[in-house]
Image (cartoon, rainbow, N blue to C red; front, top):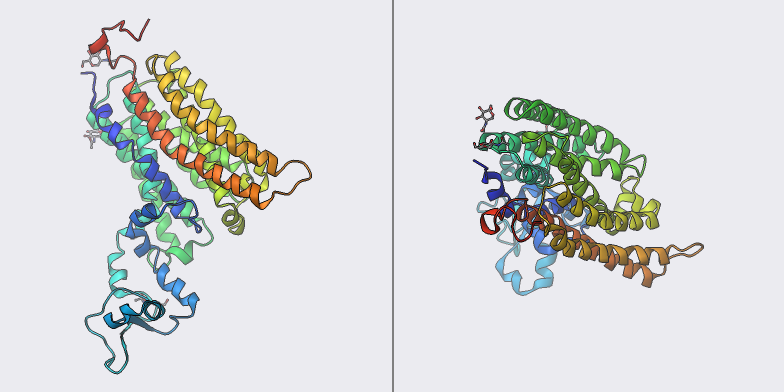
Length: 425
Ligand SMILES: *[C@@H]1O[C@H](CO)[C@@H](O)[C@H](O)[C@H]1NC(C)=O
Ligand SMILES: *[C@@H]1O[C@H](CO)[C@@H](O)[C@H](O)[C@H]1NC(C)=O
Ligand SMILES: *[C@@H]1O[C@H](CO)[C@@H](O)[C@H](O)[C@H]1NC(C)=O
């Protein structure tokens, strides 16, 4: 049975990586690149578990310092300015604990720490979900599954399930360690999950994940999973604060899941595996460099050492360089027999689209930061615009190329065109 199981499920799932990456962005403080709907859709889980961000923000406004919350009554809704000034929550308390009939708004008591008790009760599982960065984990799992779907060897459902579960747990573990190592972790999570608990969770998830991979898939995949936890949680997380090389290390982290997917059923000596890894590796530069350009001030403020502000020209140049590398990588996938001969052509459209915007971004940054010049406001505006375009192109580029690769998997259309079909030979 040449199993279409994996291939059957993954094309639709592959639309998700786009969302997966936005999860990462939302975790960052300044969501200037995020469109509102995405922000809104992002699980309320995060709001609940990472806490009472809303309460904290209000506290800074100087509106909500007392242990009381003001809730607008419906009369006030007609006077929007006043209502806005008074409303701090839309949660209407059914049992006001104070006598409020003499004032024009309802009042309810907050607990001493400033959280709703309801919120605290709901946050039992949510913090662990947030710790594992669900969207990033989804991207990691999907890139492994897509790669598994592209291997020439037989796939099986138990193996696919084990691969999915094991990869997800490894990624959750790495993300939990990564977050727990952040200096502002306490501010974000302490109320629900303390640092030691985060590490415990990471240890359990990592151990179970690697075990599932070793027992249910094979040792190579298990070792790759363990290696990726170390690479991401220790090396990348440490380098983020010391050297711009962190972007390259982070890209390696993204290149390993496709190797895991491939190694599940096929030997890693096959060059096809490395082409898929290269695809994921290269993609991250136009994607991440454009993204980080938009939030460079926040990175700077948070004490990260990122190419986007250390060397803006290099940042844009590297993004463009790797966007160009997509063309030969897609060609090599066909050359090594993973995909058919049409793939380089139609993936080329997507590659060209991303390369075009990253070229514009690079060109603009070259002008902006030419020797002895400081960027003008006009120039920066253009660069910001091109970075945004590059970012969104990359968000659609990756799922697009992976879906195309699966549609053009070598031999897929043999039933229609015959083994030496019209497209081959
Ligand atoms: C795949 O499965 C089919 C039928 O189960 C078998 O004949 C074939 O040899 C397998 N191929 C590989 C590469 O294991
Ligand atoms: C409030 O904070 C105190 C001390 O930090 C803690 O002991 C208590 O459990 C917290 N209460 C709630 C409801 O979270
Ligand atoms: C994982 O692999 C084991 C061993 O091959 C197998 O028995 C089990 O059914 C697999 N798990 C799932 C969820 O398919």
